[in-house]
Amino acid sequence: MPLPVITNIYQVKLVWNASNIPRPATNDIYIHDLAGTTTELAVYNAVAAAMHANMWNMVNGGGTINTVVVTKLDGVSAGVVFSTGGGAVWQGGGSGEPIPQGCAVVTFRTTQRGRSGRGRVYLPWITEPNQTAGVLSASAVTACQTAWDAFATALSTATYPLVVVSGVLGVANLTQSQLVRPFLKTQRRRALR
Image (cartoon, rainbow, N blue to C red; front, side, top):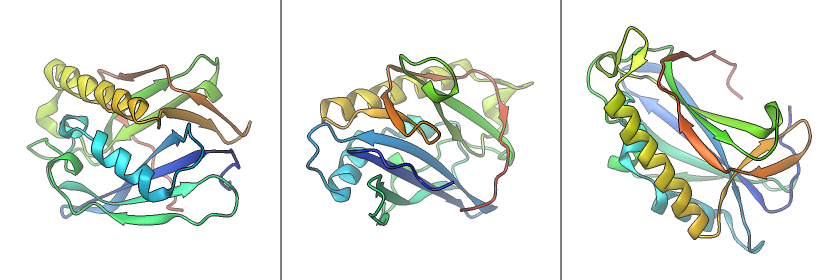
């Protein structure tokens, strides 16, 4: 499915790689440019400035977001690729063996009901010590939640709030809250696009 066309909305694709895991993982988040005058570089800089290392505290330490692709959803712009250069805010903080298909889920909620009003990010390669019988470490979840809340607040302060995009409806709704789920989930593999 092609990307929807929505005025002043940017897709930010976080591309993960790990030396000990053969397939990359990606996370898509969406940003609303409230001023309507920004560039892909400004969006990348705002995201980079808002990042917190604890957003990835349960992800295997070998996993790194090396590349960020920012695409304006105007129907004509190509994605602009940025190299993060690594660093703690772009790297997993978990130690121990990764669970390749295991992930933690961050759910984004809006004021809209139904699937089109919810978004999510899958944190890949959760490490075995960060869970027991499928329940994620309470302290790790709390730290991760605090980091995601700070990330969302920093973006809103910078006039780039998080939104949930519905490709089916072609709309973007402002995110009202984010919730780090306390249970290990199974990530369904999809074809790379």
